[in-house]
Amino acid sequence: MSDSNTTNFTNPSTFILLGIPGLEAAHIWISIPFCTMYIITILGNFTILFTVKMEPKLHVPMYYFLCMLAVTDLVLSTSILPKTLNIFWFNSREIDFNACFTQMYFMHFFSAMESGILLAMALDRYVAICDPLRYSTILTNPVVSKIGLAMVLRGSMLVLPYLLLAKRWPYCRTNIIPHTYCEHMAVVNLACADIRVSSYYGLFMAFFLSSLDLFFIALSYTQILRAIFSLPTKDARLKTFGTCVSHICVILASYIPAFFSFFMHRLSHNVPLYFHILIANMYLLVPPMLNPIIYGVRTKQIRDRLLRLFIIKGPKVFS
Image (cartoon, rainbow, N blue to C red):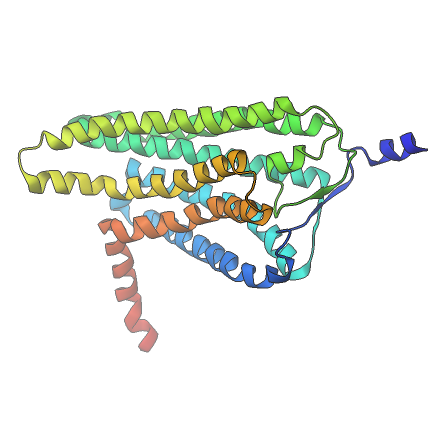
């Protein structure tokens, strides 16, 4: 009878997401900043996409990569937040077995995509500063398209083993996930099997992929800084470096929360579970919210286009 019950429970039809265990009474209050961040993410990234589409001067590789980043951020935040808000607002905790793994795949796939796009943007800044005369011949539209396609293929191929490994485990202990979304380790820890392969692959992805991208980004900026310091005047150096500030801020906003969450999860075993879950949400929600703000504030072409848009439309509102 026990065997029969275990067999019937293996790979349950649904999982139960608990939200943030220990802070259930505060779910409504926590949902306010979460929802605010999501609204800012949607408005900010759609504004970037609209501005680039409407302004012909922005139809250059730098802003094509920015549009790729905006789409990635929109999908990444949308893959987790609507379900999280359903848990907070309506106590809707059930998620279909296959939907859970689909969410897991999209989350990790677009996280890998974001890292790759940041690397592509570093390449763009490297070519623009270190080899400006050949910029338009090196980063042509077909080359930008191929880089984007390479990032998609890389992300899909590297993240697919996450899904395949996670789905092959038998889930017969419980179907309760102490998290707001189907985070990889939170799900596979429910398996009644030796999950070391999944754990090691998760370490490989977090360390190897992100560290490799970060290494090449650092290498690009080493060459960029050498080129900047070789410029004859201070004004020229500041002006050239200013074209990189937005990208540097986005890199910091993306990698610092991710690495903080990763190392805290692996090393800080005395930290309360709810703090782990809050940080795991922050590193997926904060960068998509900050990226369009950083580029909107720091990039003159985007600011000018938005100002023209509001100045042109302004009088019509009061007419």
